[in-house]
Amino acid sequence: MNRVCHYRDGVLWLDDFRARDLAQQFQTPLYVYSEQTIIDRWLRFADAWPAPHRICYAVKANSHIAILQLMARLGAGFDIVSQGELERVLAAGAEPATVVFSGVAKSAEEIRRALSVGIGCFNVESQQELQRIEAIASDMGKVANVSIRINPNVDAGTHPYISTGLKTNKFGIDYELADAVFDYAAQSPTLNLQGIDCHIGSQITEPAPFLDAAKRMFAWVDKLAKRGIAISHLDLGGGFGVPYHDEAAFPTAEYLQGLLGLAKDYPQLTLMLEPGRSLVAEAGVLLTRVEYVKHSTEKRFAIVDAGMNDLLRPALYQAYHAILPEREEQQLGQVTDIVGPVCETGDFLAHARHLAVAPGDLIAVANAGAYGMSMSSNYNSRRRPAEVLLQGQQAKLITAREQYSQLWQREQLVYTMQSDEG
Ligand code: LLP
Image (cartoon, rainbow, N blue to C red; front, top):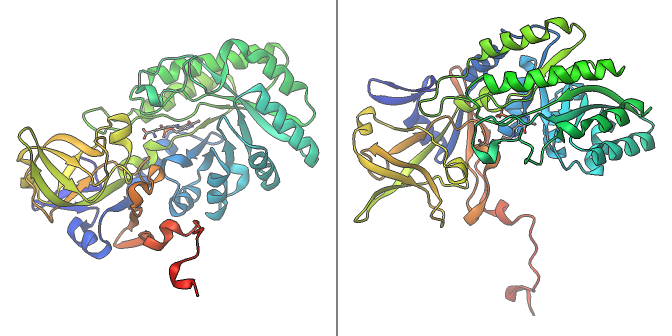
């Protein structure tokens, strides 16, 4: 069990708050984050990662502006994949120069905005994108810092939907086709070729595939140097796994030591990492309340007030999240599926857990701080949940629960309402 969720005298606490009190004060479904856990996870990296090396938090994991603000205070830069994420980072008061911009489909508008605020670097995913950035920068009279994303073709052994470093994935530039792209970038007066980058996938629990990819990247640095192309940074992406079930914790310090070992002959290189999940997943909990308990001949269901629109990971990846009932003794019960209110068979939070719960009882879905709220939707016209940040003895509401009228605030009726006619 992670630190944020634990039992004291048999009842569930989140940091220094009784889960029941938080649910009563803020209602459910509710995302709750522990500031201290985020700081602890940050320190696992920062303590083993001396300057000038950098950490750019992958905003997609949890893009709440308060969390971005916390990351900026801790000293993080940011890995973004859209203008929306850029605007969030700016709204959080972060320094644009600390931002790297990844993603395969950067639009002209996004590139222009990123250049005008002065982001640190574009992580370029194709020759076509490189030329688009060059044309826009030239038009604006600017020089764009670029890094070329190589697809290192390593199998990270993770879920196929979240593996990104294979030749068959859409990401990065094929290992064997990248030469021409480097040459192009190196000779352009409007492009400043700063680095190379890769990202091989997510929820990878062993350092070996990362070190494999890193070795291939260092080989690229050597190859470029031989051709007279000097680069100043190497960005090795994110993807570090967290223990959702019975996985061991990712050996962060050991991995970083391994990287620093590989880098010792390259004093000119700043190394960068883009962790998302590993900084925030364990800090978050989704609190939900049981509405009904229902039996079929085959199964027992606890139907709760949070669904796949609030936490999509189980439905999309069959992801496992630990389920913690409000009272510890409720962990010894019948085998139960925990399902949501959404009209889809795929709407479940967990399958086949031992749980003795009754309507009205609270359940915590653990390790929901990454790719939880950031992947939520309004499907079934459900309001997205509220969010609370626990800061020591304070529980701060950082996102109000959506209002019903907000569900259609951007929509227009097209016929005159009967009440408006004559
Ligand atoms: N950098 C790049 C270029 C990425 O594409 C990603 C994640 C990251 C960094 C951060 O990876 P992390 O450290 O969080 O593993 N929705 C999925 C995960 C998708 C990850 C996509 N890319 C999930 O809920 O498991």
